[in-house]
Length: 393
Ligand code: GDP
Ligand code: MN
Image 1 (cartoon, protein in one colour):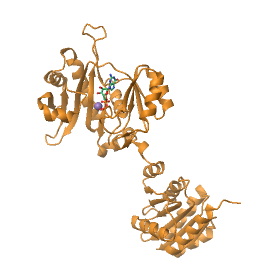
Image 2 (tube, rainbow, N blue to C red):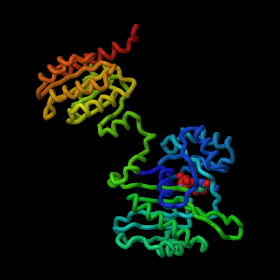
Image 3 (cartoon, rainbow, N blue to C red):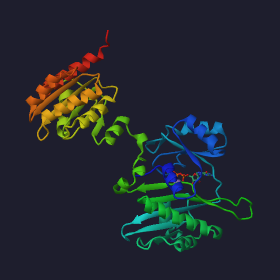
Image 4 (cartoon, rainbow, N blue to C red):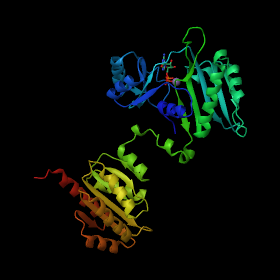
């Protein structure tokens, strides 16, 4: 999983890697408020999972509120190589004396983490590697021994960083390695890692900071990092799809007005076809799997009904291992909990279907129509959705 720059910087900050003070914003107003907090001048940075934002016009310096507003308006909604910008990061501007490059990656062939450092930062590192490979200093860390402080200083020295910042750069590498290890990342990259000018002009007191952050986390280790697992780029996801994912359901949103729920992907696919054949337009694909428990059904129905376009729902179950009587009990319980205001057509077929239909009939759920064939169910649900189009008198 790739993190956005600001998420990477927030991880950095937690591990003591120096980063500029910044705030997250998703609107022009939020960006202006954020700039008041971080102060001026500040930088307005597009948050998309792609490099080269600077060149694409996604990173702008602002000297006052008006410029923040102007840049935020231009950057939000901007397309950066196929990615739409929905989020901004506003941070205090940094003065830059030098731009370096630092990274930690997992080198599979060496079976060890690899640290890289170069004074040729701020530009595409692949280019540097191709044109001037000697400009990148490299060091493998023995995973059993761990990172030793002298290694950071040695790498800084080998890369040729300015003498006064060998120690702070070495210290930053140690912290980046700690991020890599403890967050179970497969990549931690800082480009540029900057050196600030000397505040007194006497060459002393220069600082190093991570001005950009690119972090890739190991998906297979995310279960050990629940906080990180929540960092997924949710702005790009549809709210219903996100809700379904959180509930462990397989759901795809479609454009129509008939909610579809079935057990098994194949059955759901053919249900979409049959509904379309009957003249209807499905609102989603939802495979509830083999679950027949009320909880699972309630959860699935809630996801379907969270889509305001849905005018009627087709619940199509073919009982194999799943027993239709259990599904019916689950559905009855689910209906008592959520009390939906759109009509449902329920088609139960297969194991214990008669018993299931009998239970549903006895429960006398309002607005629930039982059918025994798929064609009949599809026709009924299309009728009901069409009737719902007509505004009530
Ligand atoms: P990328 O283009 O997506 O890699 O985005 P970066 O975050 O690396 O920013 C690109 C470039 O913008 C950097 O290399 C800097 O030269 C410049 N930049 C970013 N933040 C600042 C800042 O606070 N001050 C100054 N002067 N330049 C900045
Ligand atoms: Mn960069």
